[in-house]
Structures are given as structure tokens and as C-alpha cells.
Length: 329
Image (cartoon, rainbow, N blue to C red; front, side):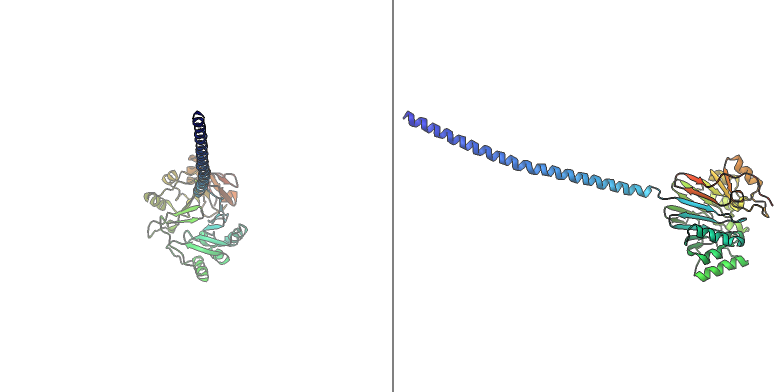
């Protein structure tokens, strides 16, 4: 009986060992099955996180690119003698403000062609004086025109009639400028500031004044706007701060009032006038103001064609500043 009891205990012991071994194996297999998905899940989750981070990075870059300034803005103050003609270029976009006098038609057209212009997206005739629109009919005839702006002021001169006829040949209808109206040349923002009255005694005050902003840089183009138009701009509360100011009315004493210059607070001024002209532009009074305020002056009668380049942060001129010497008659 003792032997049978001992054998029985041995069998039970072996049975228990076998059961425990089986249970141990089940537990191990179970752990193995549990751990594998966990590991895979962690890897997949990490992959998704990295992908999301990459997506976020792309999105951030995309968002940032919207605020980043791309390319360069070029502003050409074309030497047309006693008159105005300014070409703005950004990437494949072009704007021409005025086209100089009749005598400079070929000069302006050839300059635009050399600059690679085929289409003028915005053509601005600031006011109907010959020294600003004389070459406009030639420009219209030689280039594709997008939008054209003209103030609501006509003239009976042959020059004005030539422009109107050129517009008819191309089927162009001019838009009337509205102060506060905005348009763009790609990333370059433009705002019309004048005219702010329906009628003026002086045609110069009908001039379309435009502020152009690119990144942190800004330019102000005055046409022949005089002190009355300048006062109206200030009274309307427009932000006229600019790095570069194209002096109104070729640097005449009737423009560039002290109050206006202080508000604009330009680092640089540009004047477009003939070397010898009937008006003595630019006038001594304006030259003295610029000198006393430390505003660097560039002038077509001394420098020829003036080209300003902006990357949205820095402004560079293709020439050295001119003198503060008054113009000669």
C-alpha cells in the first residue's frame, strides 16, 4: 500500500507539472500575442506622428511663403526731359505711370521694349497735360494694354485727342480713379489716393496719386499734384509714409508742402525734369526743404534714367544722389 501511495503521489506530481507547463506556455504565447500588436501599434503611431509633423512643417512653410516676399520690384524713372514716365515691373507684371511729352514718344516706347515689356497691365495717365500723356498714344499703339486709369478731366488739345483716338483703336475704356481703390501687381500692392474733389481750378490737382507697397518698402507717385491735393490726402487720413517720393510737379514750389513732406517722411526723393526747362524746375524752395530734412535726391536731369530695385526690405539705386541745385531756364 505504501508503494501504491507513493506511485500515486508521483503520478499526481507529474500531472501537476504537466498542467503547470501547459499553463506557462499558454501564458507565454498570450503575452507574445499581446506584445506584438502593441509594438506594431507604437511603430505605426510614431509613423503617423512623424507624418503629421511633416505635414505641419509643409503647412507652416506654405503659410509662411504667403507672407514672404518673392522676387524684386523695379521702378524705372525714365529720362524723358521735362515730363514724367515711370515704369514699374514685378515678375511678369508691368505698370506705366505717364508717358512723357510728345518728343519722348520714341524714347519711352524703345525703353519699354528693351525692358522686355509686351503687356502693360496697368496704364495710368495722371492728368491731361502734354508732358505726361504726349507719348501715351504711341504706348497704346505698341503694347497690349490691360487696365487704364484716367481722371475725369478732358482737354481740347491735339495731344489729348491723339490719346483718345489710340484708345478707340484698341477698344480701351479708361477707369475713373476712386480714392482708396486698391489693385496689385503680383505681391506689389497699389492704392489710389486722389483726386478727392470733383472739380479743381488747376488741372494739376486732378493728378492720380498712387502709393505702392512691396514688403516693407513703399513708393509714392505724385503726378503734378500740388499743395491743395496734398492737403486733401492728409485730410482723408491716408497713410502716405513712403521710402521713395516722386516729387509732385517736377519739384515745383507749388507742391511738396512742408506738412506733406513731414507726413511722407521719405528717405529718398526723385524729380523728373529737363536739364534746361521753361519753368526752372526743380525750384529752390523745394530743394532747400529736402536738404534741410536730409532727404537724398535723385534727378533725371543729372542722373538720366533712374532705376530703383526693392526686394521688399532694401532699396538700391543704379546711380548716386544728385545735387540740391535749382533747375535752369
